[in-house]
Image (cartoon, rainbow, N blue to C red):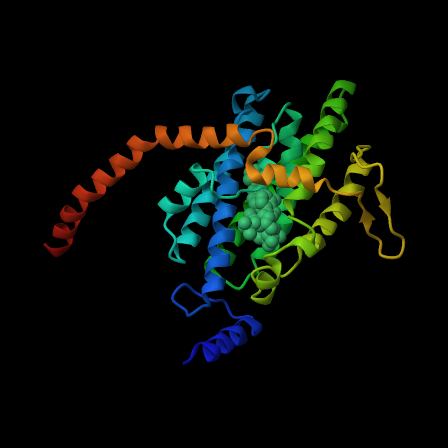
Length: 316
Ligand code: FAQ
């Protein structure tokens, strides 16, 4: 088949709701977009462990420590699934991680902000995981089989994370004046970075046309951001917390909560490596990678020695 026929057949499969699998023919641009997005997503999960990981040793009691440990560990697992999904497209984990450590790869801007108090664990869980779930529920229906299946599992775990955050925020909102103030401050600091997570406005979203055409994305950045705002604003108001937006208003005609302008200069500064914690985050990942070198060497040595023995055992 010539490429035009292949492309038509490929798009017909997508239009019919079929999943594209690793061995199937796909346009180079479809493969490139998926590797770009899945690898950024994997890096986000792994870097996303850092703001919360910093609080494991400072959890106020054993129960909360166990919950936080489980959550941070889940994020590492999500990174693993996603690196594997990217590998099905021909990328290697080594090259992807090398790009992250060299500062060439992108990951979600939100993780370049500091976690300053224990209440941030609640705000991250409810807001950041809540935003991630909206986006990932959409991706669970995407056209690429391995990515969509990874998302089903990840979404189930993220739902637990969101509930963990929601429970914390509600508890502190009903707590002492100091706890209320702490949790309101956390919401104030994480609100705008969470809204930025959904990416630039649709008019500036350079990748969306290709992603929407091939059903990698099925909703736009602005549509998902609006769903998030519509869900969170009434929920926060119900527990007497506010969002830091003097221009927030409800549009009677559409029922949408309309937000004030997002500071895109701040967003792009963070994306380009100049956020409050970009350097610290990359440094932490580089350190962890260097400290894990002996594990990789041990596994490689085991694989070289064990493989011939296992083959001999099977043959004999
Ligand atoms: N941060 O053309 P678009 C989580 C870049 S997982 C940094 O609109 P697209 C779990 C974008 O790459 C969170 N860069 O891009 C967790 C592009 O540059 P490029 C991560 C961003 O792909 C929770 C340029 O701007 N989730 O939170 C961001 O159509 C708690 C133009 O943008 C995913 O990665 C950003 N926020 O839409 C872990 C989901 N937004 O690559 C621990 C998969 C945009 O052309 C604790 N990804 N850029 O050089 C997606 O759904 C999409 O990639 C979007 C962006 C929606 C993020």
